[in-house]
Length: 93
Image (tube, rainbow, N blue to C red):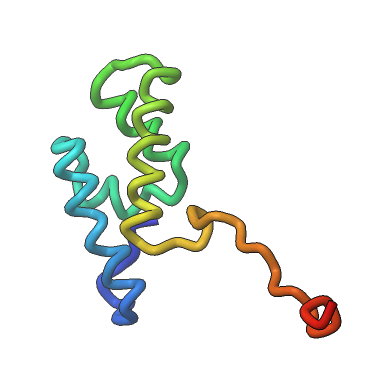
């Protein structure tokens, strides 16, 4: 979820850069935590373990952060659905 140092692609670098964003939001996250976190659920579990907060409130906070995370990464999952272009036949009508 947070990439690795060996991925030198532009996306890999942005993904690895998200470690800093996560650590700004949750300063207790270690590099080891970030290496092990691969899903939103994993992130919630680490936050709950470190803060003692409830899963429901943590999940809502993480969901908001993840939405911003995907926007920063330019993930296609956050883009609005695109209407298909009309077929050539439809344009002539």
